[in-house]
Image (cartoon, rainbow, N blue to C red):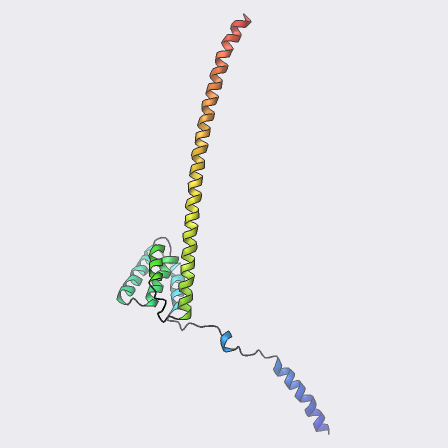
Length: 179
């Protein structure tokens, strides 16, 4: 009977201790891990490029363009589009990046991470284009306002000059009247 009581205490303790372990995620909740030859390595490559000099970035661009000409697969297309989209001014060409992204056939068998990158870059380019349009509109408005300010300042100078001329003419007449 002592043995049964010890076992009955041990079993609940064992169950409580085991229940604290995290559950294994279901298949739909498992994060997608890129194998390394695709999006992750492309992002790492572009991140490394951000620390490069302008000349080094230009060489990288030349290498990527050569790779794309040699093998115009989705991965090389994405590598080049990514650099053209996010690279420094020396290598940035967002219009060309858009053409590269639009050239990816939607029916092509590309990985989920590649599809995500295409969508992200396309959205980024759309937002940049909208920002540039908005900036151009604001710049145009500022230019028009500056022009209007200059016109008003010129009118003010002319009116001040006219007022001074009128006051100057009135003073001699006042002096003659005082005599």
